[in-house]
Length: 133
Image (tube, rainbow, N blue to C red; front, side, top):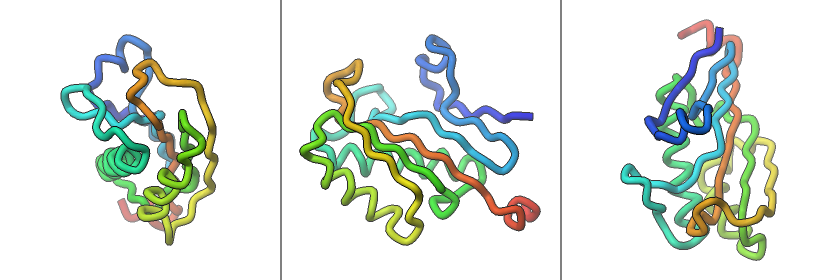
């Protein structure tokens, strides 16, 4: 049985997706932008947007009983690949010791051109950790 997690965004209903889906001991988190509670984009540079997204993803992980240490895959979708080091720096500050598998993709602009990056992650709890919950 899959468990769904919602961010409360109207986009989830409109487009037909969930912020995250937990299947067994694995959590799949949809691509996430640097939007604030009012829907406006937080930050006008790649580093700030990346840090904001990673903080949001930390909340999603915690809500589902996971942590950054459980992340096994991270995908970064950036609109300006020449600035990739700024996204990498922010990612490294959060995942430096975890070191999940990483994919960095250069993409066309998003629906809102203020969005410079979206990030999606996959987290897996070890069997021992999931037996404790």
